[in-house]
Length: 95
Length: 482
Ligand SMILES: [Zn+2]
Image 1 (tube, rainbow over the protein chains, first blue to last red):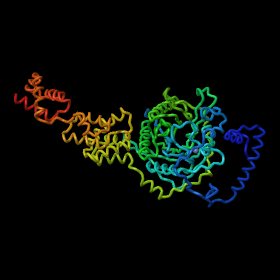
Image 2 (cartoon, rainbow over the protein chains, first blue to last red; image 1 turned 90 degrees about the vertical axis):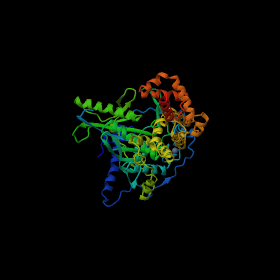
Image 3 (cartoon, rainbow over the protein chains, first blue to last red; image 1 turned 180 degrees about the vertical axis):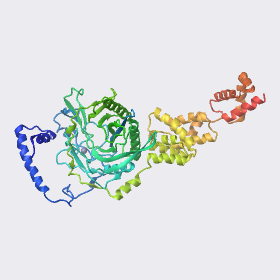
Image 4 (cartoon, each protein chain N blue to C red; image 1 turned 135 degrees about the vertical axis):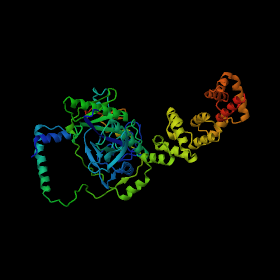
């Protein structure tokens, strides 16, 4: 059973703020999802290799060639604010 | 370090690979471009874009792995390392977690107790993050400016085993690592431009204790010297805490070059949960034997092999061989000279002496030197043939180095040819003898050393061009017959 502190930790990792009622609501919903996963875990997978990729490709490469980058003007249209060709963002403490 | 404690150091080195384009897109990796001029939807992490791996990155990672005695894993894959920070536009870094491309290698370093092997636990490929500058002063800044040119620059991270026991071993490891990577050409390892960065894990434990002590991680060291000094400081700091009965806190500390100490970064260590999972956009790698063999056969001779060969093949002292093989370019220059002039020790002396001195004075790379190996060997031949004296050779050498002219041409233009004409030398010797009667008396009364003074006078008269052997002989003959 997921507890409120688990939800708070997940919210923290995702950098989102949850109200108490939201935390409670999501705890229930996430719990439901985890129950599905527990159900799947009942299947015997002893001799199966884990499926990490939806398609069975390998070694997909490109050559080491330089092609033109995007125009900086276009790049910076995504910036919340711009200064001297750079993205200006709120300062974040620590790592 | 007192004998009561043993130091345990492990190093994590990030090296920028010398590709033209980024790891997952075709943006340029050139250093020093204007901010955000080398970005595209892929490296900006825009939704719906597909990263495609640069094959050269894999080639270079395999090369590094082989040169560092690693196993190359046939299966390896890319994972997403999740964290939020403005220098990382996707909010995850593509890296390799549980299946890195190379594992279980080692580097040999020279220590006072002889050769020591430092293990390499793993090498993995990953993308670099962007560059973040805080606006204004660090403690008062409210905003940061981000340049994403670095985002997606290909890196390998080389993780050492905790085999390093002293700060000076750490420095030796880094020096050797850098030399190898430069030799094989996978990186320029320029610390100023950030193409080689090093973090260190350090702990101490009472001698005899099996378990490791609590470690701290050191960051922000901008030179090998800084790494060594930061480690020295940190080991001492930890020792004091333990001796006073305190406890080491596991944390990240930053090296402050101006204060000469490490400072706690006070980060929430427990928050470091990267939730790695395989990147579904990047199919796994299958590196087969042929691929590894192909790269192996393209590897150049490595520094230690070359050094040993120089000792063996050219009968050079260990010291000479070490200096000459410091870089591949210098070693190649030396070998090109020796091809045309077989006295390897003579060539070595000139290269280790005047060549390296002038290189440093003029602040040049070897590729920029105008003097060719043929010029140097040509000059040595002129000395052997008695055309120039060893004293004059120094002048010729400097001139060759600065102008790139052939030694014969310099000798001709500057009139530096050695005077070996007996008649001409006799005339000058007589003049010198006449001008220095007291010295002549000294020699006659047995002070043989005084002859050097007269030789010097003749050299002065001829501006160094007289054949010193002949001058010596003529002076003796003349004084005897007086
Ligand atoms: Zn790009």
